[in-house]
Length: 343
Image (tube, rainbow, N blue to C red):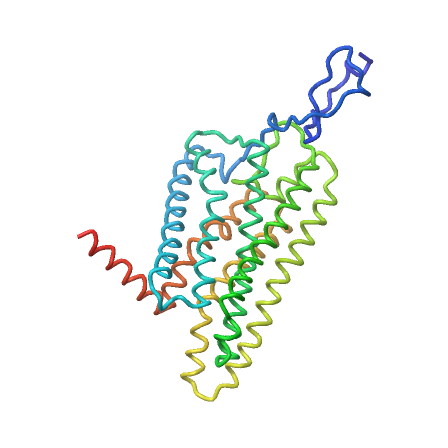
């Protein structure tokens, strides 16, 4: 051992390609790296460290999660059970509801488990998987909102050609393309996360492995990761938002050109639910990331992120069912049918 062993020890770094400790007398130049990531653990600090609030947070998030799952699954069942809702708009809505269930299930169940067991630890593999599915479902959600805006554009601006343009093949292709693009994006970003090294006792000031927070805690250089995440957000998220804005600019121009007031109201009512969901989804995301650039409190950012990761998927079924008469009727028929069978 050299004289450095008597000085201050630097924090131990953990990397995906880091091998086991060298044995005494071993030759460093002939050692081959081996995987040791199963030893890495992250600590999710959650929303609050106050013990008195843990029970309240647990029951609050359990209630929101159950409402989210039940509400979105009811939407899916109502659409599948009613042949009158077998149209492109409801096909996309059905997929959006399933994605919202997956999006919330990526983060909330693990948080509830940690609160119940009083444990904050999550393995590196678990954190990596959580980041993958978080990016996956967020990406599909993002693309589906753009696809639904295009569907409304065709329905209002080209009503006579709607059935021809929005064919079953195109609808299936748009949904499949959304999934494929999101899988490729989340896989590539997860691959870049694999290249990072972390010091021991990594504390994530969040209730899940939020990619920006995790990358910011790495001991190695993260410039490339931040560039890739910024490009992905700009190209995929910004591109989808630009498509939505373009679709609604065309829709508004078409509505203004209509002669009758009832026609204008009917056309706008078909977009009201989707426009509300788009405003809620993108508004909360932009609010969280703009506030994180201003404030230096990561716990406040984590609390604000509850809006887009938990609250928005929970509210979507209420927005669509309250503003859509056909969907309300389908839900009522589904409940009556189940009630009669139970009786």
